[in-house]
Length: 200
Image (cartoon, rainbow, N blue to C red):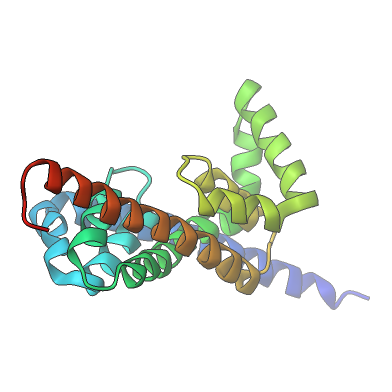
C-alpha cells in the first residue's frame, strides 16, 4: 500500500517544473520583445509567418504589450488570403498560451494560497466556474477580445485541464478571434484608404 507515495512526489515535482518552465518562458519572451522591439514591430513584413511568430509572443507575454492585434489587423488587408492571417494568428496565440497553461499547472495551488481578499475570492469563483463549464468558458474567452483569457488559462492549468483539450479548444477560439481581427482590418482599412483617395 506504500507504492503510490513515490508516484505522487514525482508528479508534484513534474508539475512544479512545468510551472517554473512556463514562468521562465514567459519572462524570456517578454525580454525578447523588449530587446528585439524593432524586429518585433517589423514582423508584419514577413507575411503569414510574421503573423504566426508575433502571435506566439502576443499569446505568451502578458507582462509586455506586443503590437500583435495591430499587425494582424493590418495584415488582414495587405495579405492576399485574409483567412490565412486569422489562422496563423490563432495557431501562434495557442502556442504562446501554452506557457500560461504550464504556469498554472505547476503553480496553481501556490497562486491560490498566496492570494488574499478580493483577489482570492475572484480566483475561487473562476476555479468554481471552470470546474463546471471549463471548456465553454475557455472557448468563449479565447474567441473574443478581452483580458480575461489569461487567468482562465492559469485556472485551466491549476485544475489539470487536459493539455490536448486545452490546445484544441483554445486554438478553435483563437482562430475565430484572429479571423475577426483580420477581416475587420480588411474591411476597415479598405474603407479608410478609399476615404483617403487610394485606388483600391
